Amino acid sequence: MIHLKNKEQISLMREAGRITGEALLVARELVKEGVSTKQIDTAIRSYIERCGAKPTFLGYGGFPASACISVNDEVIHGIPSADRILQEGDLVKIDTGATFKGFVGDSANTFPVGKVNETAEKLMLAAKEGFYRGVSQVKEGNRIGDVGAAIEGKVSEYGFTVLRRYVGHGVGRDMHEDPDVPNYGTPGRGARLVNGMTIAIEPMVSAGAPDVYEMPNGWTVRTKDGSLASHYEHTIALTEEGVILLTKVEDDL
Image (cartoon, rainbow, N blue to C red; front, side, top):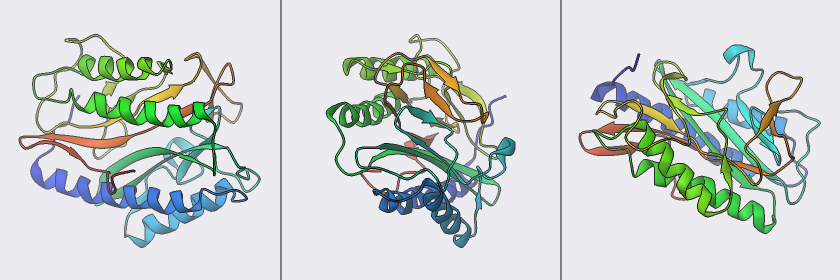
């Protein structure tokens, strides 16, 4: 069931989104050689809690941290560790969320450690541009398939592929609500977009094949062929005034 939000609820989601986006800014400053993924997670948790919010990811389904931090061929759901030390050239995906007064913000971005190779640079662009191409189709009366087809089309222009096993989703009082928002689709198909919908659009992009597997820890998802991967996500709201990017706090985030 799709839960539509009123103006007051969207306002609360905007605050949750602001905290989430600012937590990613904190994380970005720590993405440097020699820093552990655990250090980044600790800083994210501290910031969210100082803002009077709760780290949405912490304990969600048993997840042991406040952020998913995935490196290189890890696409999503990487578990922060004091033993995972970032190195020059790494590609780091950070996904986090804050719950404020019962509503959730969910956002992710990919950050380079120092200088990265050309493939990594293009991957980051493909995921981000795929997101915005998808957002361009978020209009009342359009369908989820229009969004997914637009995302995949942009990613394909780079010669990359989108994951099919994992998708975007509705967001609200729960981090995962209806509808699913795949990064692929058929125009004119899927759930109809209406004002009051709040969804997370999140291209997950592989430089190689889209096939992935889950590691024995039960969380971390990696590309089967070891290809680099990128991830970009914002929670958005469709309103009478248009689309609001609830988790966006800075132009390059």
